Image (cartoon, rainbow, N blue to C red; front, side):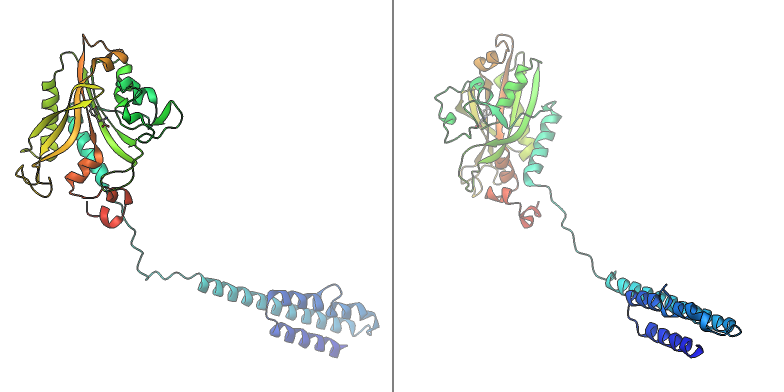
Amino acid sequence: MKEIIEKIRTEALKAIEASGDLDTLNDIRVAYLGKKGELTNVLKSMKNVAAEERPIVGQMVNDARTEIEGRLEAMKKSFAAKLREQQLKSEVIDVTLPAKRRAIGHMHPNTRALEEIEDIFVGMGYEVVEGPEVEYDYYNFEALNIPANHPAKDEQDTFYITKDILLRTQTSPCQVRVMEKGKLPIRMIAPGRVFRSDEVDATHSPSFHQIEGLVIDRNITFADLKGTLEQFAKEMFGENTRVKFRPHHFPFTEPSAEVDVSCFKCGGKGCRFCKGEGWIEILGCGMVHPKVLRMSGIDPEQYSGFAFGLGLERIALLKYEIDDMRLLYENDERFLKQF
Ligand code: DAH
């Protein structure tokens, strides 16, 4: 009996030493110490042992059991430690690696120009308002005195959504929306995105930005319009800038004009920048047409006003000397970084 126990003990310990993982250890525990395990079987056959021998054999079985349990436990711990070590090794972070440089955005030339323009007009007491990009035909055309057969209404120029709803082709509908509210006087600018079905080239894009301006009060005259835009031009392009008003036609203003500023590169002598002209066109403007006032519920006998509209991209291109509008939309970081 003693030899059998000794044999079981050495076999079990050998098996434990040779085991490679937790599952095998568990199998060994069951095989030797389990209910039907080898050591347990020895206890079951105690009845065959002489009475005086039983305490000694019992002690031997218990000792063997304790020893095997101890080795199993120790082995389990060493496996767990090894596993943890492997895990730590695989998850190691090299804190000495140089960090990836994160690109920081730059203010877009459009945004910079817009903020400058807004600052100038807010400084003159104007409010900044916004209107919807998806607009009714009524606000975009009809209420601005643009008749049904006007070329601008052609599908070749305008993105229609339904017969009556379209993508606004100009920010001028914001004039109508503000006048309709009936709160006078008005002194506002309305920047925003506009849409025209144009092909992309160096000076055209199907989507660009305009800034609308509108002033309505008693006794507003063309002199107010001239003074305001001259002041704006000086603040935007420099103290020595001169302005020139050329007669023009817009359906919603009468009289209407286009405004040129003296070339801020050559001062008006003529250079590559102004194509030898000495002047650069920057906006359209005029006195709000009495019909437009009346349609929006304002009495032209009591009130008058002026309006103007300028292209944001055009101003940004001029101000930052960029010669292709497409650069403004590509958002190439190497380009934007320069501003
Ligand atoms: N809406 C015109 C356009 O898109 C620009 C414009 C001209 C706006 C004269 C005005 C204005 O308010 O008075 O071409």
